[in-house]
Structures are given as structure tokens and as C-alpha cells.
Amino acid sequence: MARIISMRKAINEAIRQCMEEDPTVILLGEDVAGGEGSPGADDAWGGDMGITKGLQPQFGKDRVMDTPISESAIMGCAVGAAASGLRPIAELMFVDFMGVCFDQIMNQAAKFRYMFGGKAQTPVVIRTQIGAGYNAAAQHSQCLYPMFAHIPGIKCVIPSSAYDTKGLLIQAVRDNDPVIFFEHKVMYDEVSDDVPKEAYAIPFGEANIVRDGGDITIVAMARMVHKAKEAAEVLAREGIECQIVDPRTISPLDEDTIIECVEETGRLIVVDEAYPRCNMGTDIAALAAREAFGALKAPIQVVSPPHVPVPFAPELEEAFIPSPEKIADAVRKTVSYGA
Image (cartoon, rainbow, N blue to C red; front, side, top):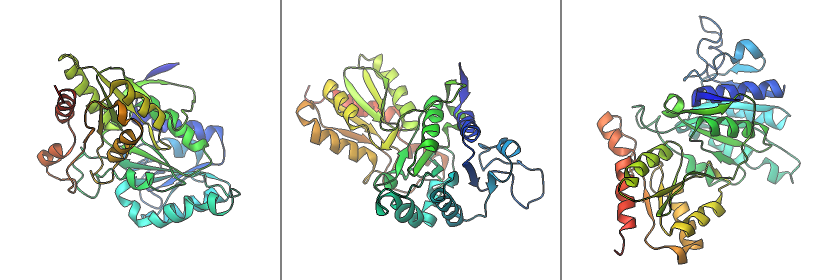
């Protein structure tokens, strides 16, 4: 049975159902249980965005644990617990802070299965926030997921809907490999849709065709899917029909669906909120150029922010983020190429 809930609620519900299903699932992070040792009621916060509120009273402090303000401590504990038979969900507030514990992710969690000949498993889920639009400045607003997609052994998930969020997060918890689950902070309450009450899982590596259209393919991730949909509505009134593809996971990446879609339309725009150098936009553009070159009717375009830190000033931040207008302009240019 489905009902309309927010992405925020979908995450909470997915974690709750995973913890009910499997007693080895634990949750740890800063203030996820209310702030250990601080004055005030238990479960006062539920993490910095209140996502995990209500879980500590149900599962207790043995399974919902507050940590020190130390990314290295959080990740070291989570990776060690995963290697010892538990299934931790570790909340690292912002992806911007991953640099503090990058070695534990890149050289430990990602490589255990490979280096021990498949005998070691590290079923850890790292939840973290990405994205601009919250006026949180340059140290709390980045989309650094391309850095992690580059590392073999890590699965990278970027949902764009509440439905996908719940299904992908449940799949992540059940997976035996380390998964980084990137949540766009602006979407917690901005995005709501039909989500079944029961638990369900969405397989990794299967893109979602969000919108059908025969004139051009737009590949977009997270909040950019919604920006692309806004642009597509405007363009449809001009007679341009856009096909929108959401990869949902970037490692593994559903290359087959992307290539098939580009071959159908002959045109490609990739919209990526990550910095423009070495982002997923350039990676997907290279994939299409390599595998579907003969089908292309126009040069591929990537719509992404300028190569500068995320601005703090609201007007500058708005100009930094790829907008429906910028996407629509790129589509018009591509569709009119050679005309």
C-alpha cells in the first residue's frame, strides 16, 4: 500500500524496517540518539537534520549510538563493526567532511573483500548529505560523489525520489559491500511521492527512465532530475520532447540503458551538480561518445556549476546551481545543431 511521504520520512522508515528485520543492523553518528552525555531528553535531535528521530526509543542505545564529533572515530568504528559481523549504518553529516576519514573508506572498507580473496565482507552503509541550495557555504554544500565513484569496491547511490530513496537504502543495508548513500539535503522535505508501507528493495545498477521523449536524452542525478523535469515541461510547450534518465547509482552505473537511450534520440545532455572537472557528467559524456558515437546528431553537452567553491551569498549560490533555464538553453542549442 502506497502513500505520499517525504524523502525524510522514507529514510527513517527504511532504517526502521531494516533494524526490525535484522538485529545486526546498528546506527551510529553524531546526535542520532539525542546527544550522549548532554543535558536534555533522549532522542532530542535524530541527527543534524532530524532524520533518525524516533529510532533510539524503539531500538535502544545499544543499537542507536551517539558518537564523538570525530569522522575518523565514526568510520573506524563502523568499518570495524562491519568486518566483525554487524551491519552498521554510519551517518557522516556532510560529504564535505569525508576527507577526515578518507583513508578508512578508500584503503580499508573498499579493499577488504579484494585483499582477502573474497573471504572478508564489509557491509557498511555510509549516509551523507550533498548539495547546494541551503546557504550552507563552501564547506557544507559540495557534491563530491565522483571522488567515491572513482574507487573500486565502493557502491555509490544517489536517489532523486522518496520511492527510490527507501528502496535503494534497504538494498544498501542488505548489500555485503560498502555503500555510500548520498542524500541531497534540499530534497528531504522538497520531494514527496508514493511510497509503499512495506519494505522493498531496488537493485543497484538499474537506471530509471523518469520521462519519455524522442528528441533528446537528459541524464541527471539527485536534485538535478527535478531541475531537468522543470526544463522538459517548458521545452514540451515548444515542441521539444525530452527523455530524462536517472542513473540512481553511479557505481555500478547502468551503462546499457544510457547508451540505448542516446542511440534512440541521437542527442545527449548530462546535468551534474558536481564540480565540472572529472565529474559524472564528463564520465557519462565520454561513455556515450565512445559507445554511441555513430548515433549522435549533435555534440554532447554537460550542464554543471562553474569550477569555483560553492558561494555563501544566496544570489551567487543560485547562480552557481544548474537551473532549468540553463538546461533548457543547452537542449535548444543541441536540438538546433546543424539546422
